[in-house]
Image 1 (cartoon, helix red, strand yellow):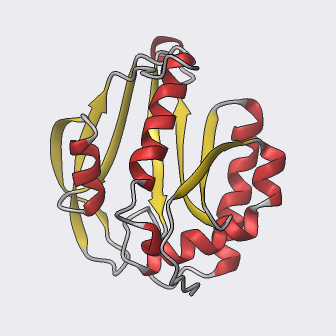
Image 2 (tube, rainbow, N blue to C red; image 1 turned 180 degrees about the horizontal axis):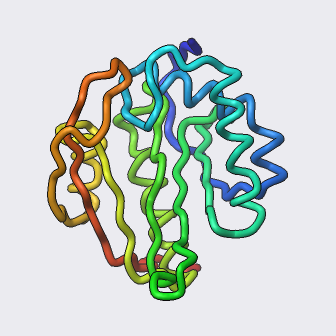
Length: 188
């Protein structure tokens, strides 16, 4: 487990290409392992090792390369990776106007400093600029992530009981959210 004791703010958010995803795979894998060890429900179980996390990131490169998956990372003032977020654009002809927000994760040491909100705002603005008019996501009911989405203006669509397990393998409900993204930055 990677331990960070420094307090830092988000220094910058960058969109990754398939090439930069591959180049930063080990750093992304370390982030994923730390976030899952911290209890975040991201589709992985406790005990996720670096090799498994790296393989998962590798599996995303083709979708990033073809443009179906958009992926951003956040770095702290010291240059360390603080978080990531992505969205997947629907490819079916009747759904190309929507995208699913996926894997918003912030390193436990960087939480409470606006990293999640900054990543979310960037993903939403970029989705709007790409012509996405509806975004949706699911998150563990009662989690810190649920509070972030609510405070960022996402609308609850409902809750599904026993939807997924948490990292310890316990069945947990999930809350579905949606939002119509806007690019609120006139400088872009």
